[in-house]
Image 1 (cartoon, rainbow, N blue to C red):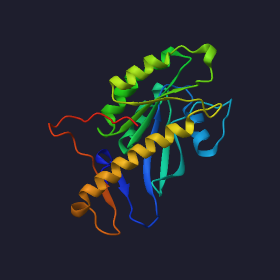
Image 2: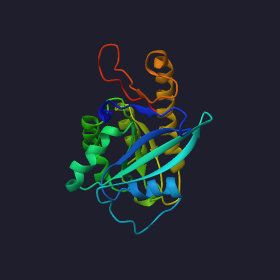
Image 3: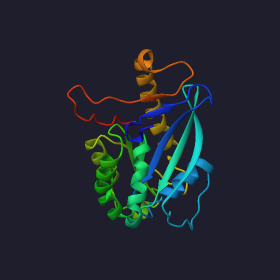
Image 4: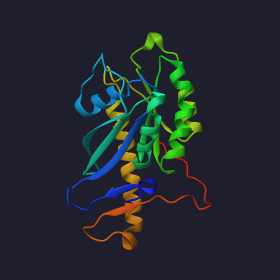
Length: 220
């Protein structure tokens, strides 16, 4: 299967669920690993170490009465792992682009991460900008309105989270997974007569806009 053109892979009713691949990207130390562990295991580690290469975890959620299995890849933020981690973008249909609300430098780098993601990922990938560590109110360096405006200007979803106290972590993953699932489902219905055979796998690809341009990501 060509992962670069992958939008979703639906394996009929064999396993009774749809797989959605999400990547976590952003600078080292912004809390990507703890967001993943909080969502998948409801755990938080104050002494969490930097991810080496790529790690992943899975979790199922219910959307419209359907079990959706999310495979979430936590990528290293260090420059030396960039060639390894960027290879995982090609299989993803969604991404959480994470920065630390208490460190403006991690927000300044969001532009670079966004460019890298769009250079390597499917053009239709759904992206959510995530301001993590919102519990550090007294240390906040990135105003919410500034990040929200950036997200709107670039067609991104936006949310602030705290992996430490669980604020909005569930909502962030549920929003992006639900958005992706509904887009995939709508496209599957539209193309079912031509592309989907009963009981077989199907590759669902979201087309470009009528003028051939890259469509903007719809916000969750």
